[in-house]
Each structure stands twice: as structure tokens, then as C-alpha cells.
Length: 230
Length: 279
Image 1: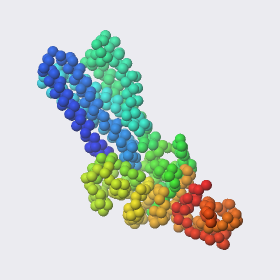
Image 2: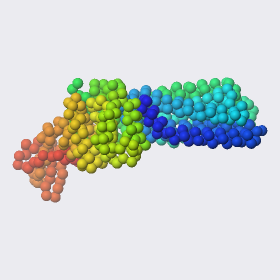
Image 3: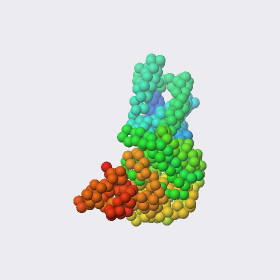
Image 4: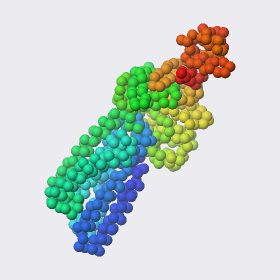
């Protein structure tokens, strides 16, 4: 398993570098904005959460593409025919996801630390909890894509299907519900952002993402056991 | 253990293709050539043997274990070579060594780099810049660089020039110096098997036509060179395949002794395959 992880992370370090560059540039921009226009922390806070999500999205971009590339060149067949059991293969995919999200999370926390130099409110227990839950949510959505990558032999198609189903089926209703509960109408995200500081929403999101990780571990395992991966 | 691979009544159905009751064995210590035209089912059968297809009818045992439940220790003994590059194209040889060390507990880096020197493969060039011959040599080296007892090769010489093919076949012969080693080699280049195969297994449209010891197969089959009148005399039950020419006809048969007056030639494996396939 170590070999697969080593090879995969080695080949895709450019995504980590890109996420790092985005984090640095984005944080610099936000810091500049905050120091220049101190009375607009709300706008910058919203922008900063969006920026952290972008960093997470960039850093996770390689996961589905990597699985697709390994399937297309039949390296997955070589590993499954070699010393790797199906359970180990799925576990290695999970580790890739979790390690990547972990690195993304660390980047986001460092971004928050830097921003806290300009405004302490950018790095609190609340902001750390929020980014942890958002990171695990993003990671779990990326995790769900894997069985579809095997079926479609394409990370793009799989991401599109999952994006559409989850986007319209789960995320949008959650956003609307948050706005209804908070009676916020400024934007689709405003209710959600307000409720993010509420412990219950964080717990619900954490619970959902944990459940998705567990359920789709077994979904992916069953898909690999079914055969015809490559 | 008499057979290192036993395939029994494998049936798999796909939208445009199916394997029908495929059965054959690979005796331990032997080289079995698995031949068939493109699309006959060779690669699908090999994937089934490696446990990479969905379960279905029939059974496959590899080194005494169910192919779908091979233990890690048994998988270490199987070396696999697929047609084309089966490794991420942006890796180099040095990086692949580290990757494979993490996959195979019995991986031998010194042996792997020894093959790299022998095959004159660069250590720091990405695989995407390798030629086809280099790719196949790399794949074979990787398959031989752990404690391999059984080599399973899917079209390992396809697209290679004759010199390269001869070199690779020599490597397989060297591998077979150890009597505990076995090879299952699937190919449509039958001339390669004339030199190394002990047994020939022929698959056509998803069905096994025959599995025979190579010398016996060559001895049994004969091509009768006959005129139209002579062709009329030959019992239809004795005709495996006919090729009609302008001046003479060729008939493949296993009963040439019944027609001593008709000239008969020994066929090549390729000719046998063509006659069986021709309808």
C-alpha cells in the first residue's frame, strides 16, 4: 500500500503546489484588503471562506483524475493482481483522500493564522471548527465520486453526475433551508454562513460526511469486488 | 500440485461477447501458449484467471487457490505482463522501483536494476518517452523482479520487431530453466510459440477449440494438397478446414493416414489456427 501512496502523491504534487500558491496569493489579497478597508470584515470573511474552499477544491482535484489514469493504463489491474488485496486497494484510496484533505486543512488553518495577524477574528476555535467540517464535507463528496469513476472510466463524468445529484439534491436544499431558518435573504449562502457558527449545523454536517465515508467505503469495495475495474 | 492453473467451465457474458465453457490447465513446469485471433477471448480469460472479472459460472484455481480469493503470499508468486504500458506514464524506473517495493513484499530491487542494465533501460526517463520495445522489457523486468513462479503474459511481443521478440523469448526460456516455473502466454503471433510452448490452447469466439501438447498437435495435423477430384473423395468428417486455390486445394485434417495418395505437409501453428477459424 505504501508503494501506491508514494507513487500517487509523487505524481500529483503539482496540485498541492497549485493549492499552496492559491492559498498564499489569496491570503495576501485578503490581508491587503482587510488592512486597506478595515470596516468590510464581513465581506472579506465571506470571501475568505470561499478562498479556503477553493484551496480545498484544488488540492482534491487530483484524486478522481488519478484513479481514472490508473484505471486507463491498467495499473489498477497490476496492483490488484499483485500484492494488493481489494480491501487494501480501497483503503489506500481512502488514505489518499484523507491525507489530501488533511494537508488542505493544514493549509487553510495556516491561512487563518496569517489573517489573524490583521484581524484576530479570522482565527478562533469557531473558524477552525468550521473549516474542519467544511473540509470533511468536501472530502466526503470527493470520496463518493470514486465508484462512479470506475463505472464511467472518467473522473469528469463521475464528478458531473455526483455534482448534479448532490448539488441539486442536497446542497441546494440545505442552503434554502438555512435561509428559511435564519430568515436571511441577502444571498443563497448567507443563511448557511450564519448557521455555521451554530454547533448543531456543524455536528449535522460532520455526521453526514462521516456516514458518507463509511457507506461509500463499502460501496467502493463492492464495486472493486465486482471486477472489470479497468 | 499437478497444474498451477486450472480453468473449469468458465462462462461470462458481455454485451457483444461471451466466454462459453472455457476449460484448460497449465501444468506446473510448462509453457502454455494461449492462441486465438483478435477478439477471441484471450485477454478476458486472462483477466478471469487473475480474479479481475466479476464472479460467474465455473471455477478457476491458481497455484491451488481460488482465483477470486488469492492470498497475498500467492499473488507474490504471480508475475503479470499486459499488452502496452501498465504503469503511470510519468513515473521513472527509480520511482517505479519504490512503488513496487510497496506493493510486493518479495520485491528485489537489485534484480530489477540488474534487468534495467541488461535491457539498457534509462533509470531517470519518464515512461511516456519509452518505445514499445522498452515498455515491454520494463514490464517483463517488473514481472520477474519478485519471487515469481508463474508468469502470465498477455500479448507480450505484440508490435515488436523480430529481433526484440527473439530477445524476449530468450528471457522466458531463461525463466523456465527453473522447473518449478510456469508460463501462460497469450498471443496471436503463433510463430513465437514454435520455440517455447509445451502446450497450445486455442480459443475461438469465446470457445476452446483444443488444448494439446505442442509436438503432438503438430504431429496429428496435416495439410493435404489435393485437386478438386481428390477433395471430393475426402470424407467431410475428416475436414477441419479447406482453403481453395487456383491450382490446388489445401485441407487440414487429423486423418491424413486415410489418404496416403494425397501429398501432405506439416502445418505451422499459424496455419492450424487459420484453418480452424476459417469457415
